[in-house]
Image (cartoon, rainbow over the protein chains, first blue to last red):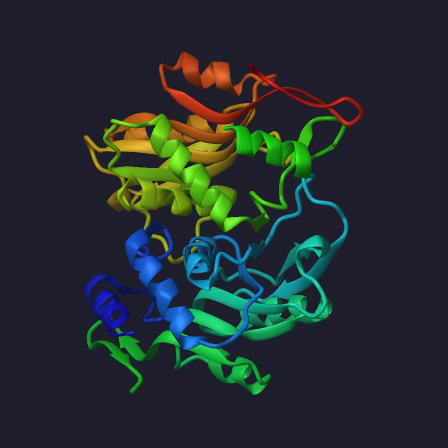
Length: 194
Length: 194
């Protein structure tokens, strides 16, 4: 998606020893809502002709992207996997584990209430980043636990130099990443694949 | 908002000793996107004629509501206050503290990058619930730290039997709650104000 690549070139900041791409001016802290609507329409084009019954994402930064994509998918329900158990949630959940590289923490659990994922449904996964694939793996696991089917994963930015893309595609899941970063470096900048 | 009251009556579940209202089938776990768009338009009607430069909310459940309200506010940027410091964020942030009643935990910090709140801006706060007012108080604090102005708070559900509404209105902040719950009880059900 050309407009996205341009936006990343313009506003993205490389941090943390060339490992972190900050795009929090438009994607995951401040959100450019009109641009996210455009991203949502691009996901619809990528998955044209695919039946999608539900969009599944993970809190927190996936939520806005998923919600603003949903109108392009006939306003299907959006569900976000939660990270922290609160007393607002029943025990009746699908649970999985995410290994966190970004946060430099131990694996953490995510869950979705069994009410909101159903056998036979066709579920589109949406997230902001694909790097090591750990969050996406856990989302796929939740969908499979429910007996539902993964249509594919719509990713805004894939760090193609990290193993997540190969890991997820190796599971037979279709991954559509709107920008695939081949390399990034504070001095040399960002290079995209293709 | 009549449609919202009906939805709460139909789908809301009272839990936790009559203290918790679960509306996670449409508001804060599974999200009814078309309905949230309607809620966004209702916020616009409530704040008709008010200049809004930015919407501020708090992760996680405020994000989808804010993002789907933004189109009704000329697609102003949405910013969400974050709860956990990650290495993706610079140190240059406005920080405040939220006392958590829902999670039964100790106060936790929230922050917004100083890049995304500016002096003189008119900021609309949006959140799913107003109960004790602790999250909203912290958001107001962040806006004031930035030298920006609070236009008001758009709340989906106010638990009017808890002290948050009076607390926030007592600060001189206009609060528009789309449904105000007078009382709720697993046996007697939900009663709305007015």
